[in-house]
Image (cartoon, rainbow, N blue to C red; front, side, top):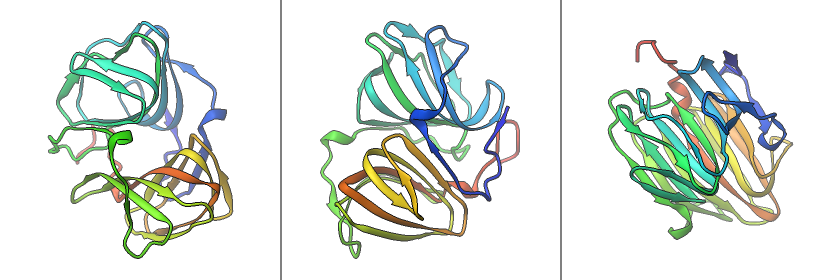
Length: 227
């Protein structure tokens, strides 16, 4: 399946308006945002686990990155409450489940193939730090390597955000609203900005909390391609 595969184009999707599509696992549905491939795919999705649902054990050949949006995600390694950011690197293995149900934002097959760094951060327990030279912006760093930088940013009401993103960027609004290049964004809006572009945003009246990844769009190899 090919969905939003032209990475030279800007893509903005209101995630809460995308229809749910069943996954191969019973009672696990997904909203697809971009995808290259079939069931083994380079993909960005919102995935919903019904209470008591269980996904078969599997190995992440290309890595998995996710944010728990609501509920509690679980696997044999522990529980991950809402607000948790996780990176399961290539070759990692687990069996996802949720006793009470949950929703996650998840990205698959978008890691450096040699990356073996696991990350598990409860963002609600972190303290945001004022961003140097960026008025109205506070940042919680989540991950950084030579390919990409991942962070959680809080934009104060009315804050004006301007940033070059030579390696492209992806944004997911978690709370609040904003305008980016004149387009309205709300909770669960996902935006992909091409390589060589800029973020030009204005936070809404209540401010904005947004997950941001920069740099990673220089690397778009789907499963089976050469890194």
